Image (cartoon, rainbow, N blue to C red; front, side):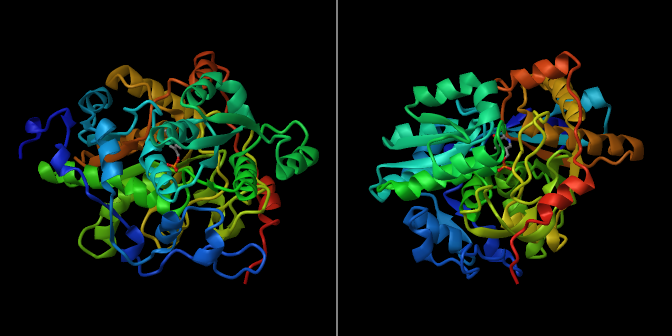
Length: 457
Ligand SMILES: *Cc1c(COP(=O)(O)O)cnc(C)c1O
């Protein structure tokens, strides 16, 4: 099909939307390593996971073999309110760059939460409701996950308790108010409301918090309150499963126009949007049906893939959560307070970690000033104000497109535009005022937290 027939935006019809999620693990020869009990270092059983997570989500977490899992109709109906999300041809960005590359982005920011996180939040709330629970607890960093979960909980009439990383709680009062509008209770973390929060505050007075410590607090509250379970917005296998809706739609939209990507790019915090975007493409790659370059982009200030160690580690700072085998900087690692761009988690999805370890994907790290430079250029030509997290992917996509300009190659690049940046204006302000700087942790700093990894053999 000739290029000029490809519309600016490719939408699917409701009928063309995926009816099942795709479980990438089913096609992996080397499965992601199982979660371990932090006490015994034995693989966690469904029985042990059930006090923390909803039953169906435990099943999904442990299922390494079923390739497709039906999306319940209630969830599909909710999806229809804000999906399918458009696959956009970035004609204006291509022109601005003067590149022969064809650039596409899958835009997940068209809902009130402003990100892809709603795709998993609604699924997790649905299963909690189905199990007859009273409510759920969670952590949120920049606030997108908390907002998404608040929306999902209000839809299914569940109570929602959110522990929000303190630096974001202070920098993003408007996020907090959106969550409260949807009925959630929001507490800055670390807080005095939990045992683990009090311990962290005593050990690191004045800490601006981290996702890892907010997770510890949320898990403690879920396990101490009957009728509550903990839900997590990234990292876990179940979250990657739900996010596969992004990749399935992307692939269906591309297939509709006979487009085959050469390079697929996504930002990586805990790995959920990237895992979802690449899922069906990686499936083809694993089955030997097609080949793609797949690139994870992370911040230079929190470089789990590019400078971390592939090892068992805690998912939380409080060291009460299961151990996951992943690329990690150590659960003690807290990114510099100067870091404004999200993606602050010390670890990475076990599934993506295994795929990276086995050479199925690449990773790169970028500095935040260059990320905001890319964000600004993108906003000016494509119109959308991108989230700083998403802008990591924009940076890498622009860099790849510029390489094509040098070589004259007409590569097709697709990247995940995970969300909008309306609540990140303090960070944009810093950039606009020329006050943003880059912080790259030293080898010694990373070695210090890596040295505290749990010993698992
Ligand atoms: C949470 C978030 C991310 C990073 O999380 P992943 O689990 O790595 O996808 C990226 N972009 C936006 C907009 C987010 O809200």
